[in-house]
Length: 159
Image 1 (tube, helix red, strand yellow):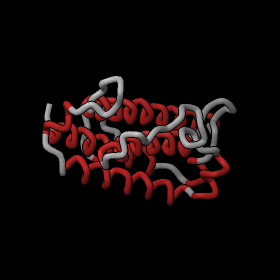
Image 2 (image 1 turned 90 degrees about the vertical axis):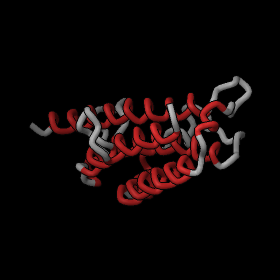
Image 3 (image 1 turned 90 degrees about the horizontal axis):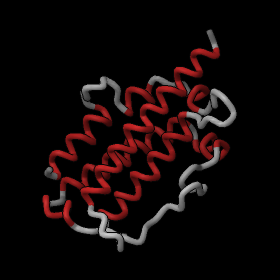
């Protein structure tokens, strides 16, 4: 694969025309602020929480592309899953703008790379940037599906 291929995948999933006919912007843009912060059932994350989590992990790739190979997120931490209260204080529009800024920066950084970056290890375990980029795309898809389920659950509660 090439960097251009991964850029096209990220752009398609973000706001393109993927085969699955859903994008991050389309799905999150369909939500009101009230819906975004609503948990359909107590143990289920809200769409806003899922989106913040998705942004946090995309930020890992951004930081590593910027050369900060030590940047990490502790799983299940407040950085990984900010609280609903923190996100409500931030606001849904701001969170959506963070997603757009995150995408812009990610594509900007990838566009500056040659295909050789894909083979470069970014950690002591030998994981390469190609592995991380693939992981981010898979993570985005997984959580896009979760956001869709949250929306479906919210709608079914109001029928």
